[in-house]
Length: 440
Ligand code: EPU
Image (cartoon, rainbow, N blue to C red; front, side):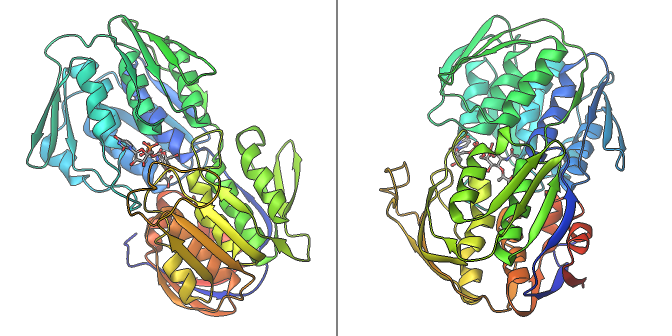
């Protein structure tokens, strides 16, 4: 699917019906990488049919891992018994398609003593540096060399456990540390770790493989390195970002969506906010029904944060619903410095949104004195009108789609190939919810 793909959307009608979300993109890709550490095959269930899974599967195959995916059943078998060094040119062909390659480092250093990482892609939502990752690898004793097309990393001797503190509880850096420490020599202790549910599920996978890991309530993770790990059998936790995206779509369009597979514990913070805005939900054993009860939505003050805070990835879809709320909403983005670019298109569609450099809302964050437009004030309710928009990144793109579905008239959303990276069969789901659209 090319980035030139577009969707013509006839908006202005509520989305109603039932859809299913499967495993979390931001867990499944990491669990796939973890399989490299095992000496026997792994089986992962509840795997979504998204492009990121295909990209990571392709990278694993380049390294000699047998990858067998039954897309409909959502079952992925990974056989790492013949892991080998991939050709630099082959890996480089994947450059720009994902940020996951950086997480191959620890496992490849253990298996092969070396790793090559192409220049990294991922969503355009700020600089997204990898300095924490490289610092961690160095602390374990790896040598990092910058080369023309990427980074070459090697381990002159067995990696050894270490003690470190992250400057910020980065999800990827915490995963980097876990995937490296489990087979390093001795004990590793990480302070100020990220504790997102996807990370805890990765820890569950690693424990099934034979790792020894404890997580304290004060963001300290301790790992005792072991010599060998086996494969695992695991069912992925569900995608709380996708679930919240559909919930926001229900709210913005005045609809009613049953999201099968959505789970409450991972979404507590989102559910609180959804309720404060005026959305209603019903939770049962199979999922969560999100709906607009009629009447006015309420404006809120919202701050994104690391878990257990309000996820940055929930922010963009919810902002579209906030354009329909009465009064002034304040949104302070504290995870990424540049995650309001998507609001340009919303403004063209009639939304009243101002972005600010200052930290608005509760507390100052690390972007406050640094010239980043990382706070937004949304004034509503404003009817949205149709427009031609271009998908800027995965979550911003889904927001544009929600805005097009909310707006009266016919919008064209360009570049929807990016949405396939993380939203499984989203056009099928839109169809099931009664949306009117054509893929062009
Ligand atoms: N950061 C650094 N240096 C580093 C790594 C991170 O400064 O070496 C900074 C980032 O620039 C950012 C902050 O730390 O300001 C947090 O980034 P983090 O490392 O936590 O993010 P990530 O691991 O790159 C994952 C998800 C993102 C999600 C974030 C936060 C994956 C593949 N990606 O990214 O998901 O927004 O955690 O929860 O797991 C998405 O799904 O659309 C997406 C962007």
